[in-house]
Length: 84
Image (cartoon, rainbow, N blue to C red; front, side, top):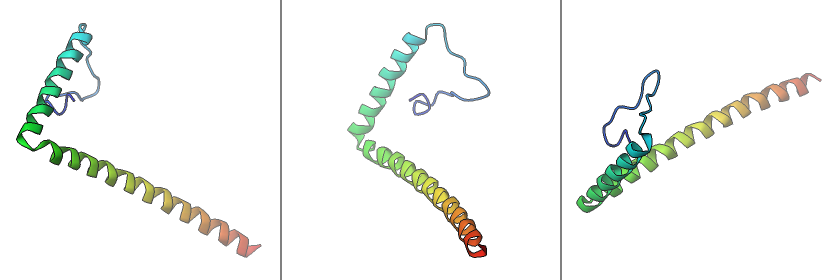
């Protein structure tokens, strides 16, 4: 939510304000207002779809990495079986 509002929230460490509950409430309210504004303009769905597409792409890449690792392990096992 903080990133969507354009508030920097990264770096080597994150500073948490003493009044974090109030800040959290303020950020949630601002984020909700941002989403309502986007929805009223008709841009909300595109943003949501873009985020969903990025998550799906990330998951697909993770799945491909797992499959590639499994293929390498399977090939090694088959090679060892053939030697036996």
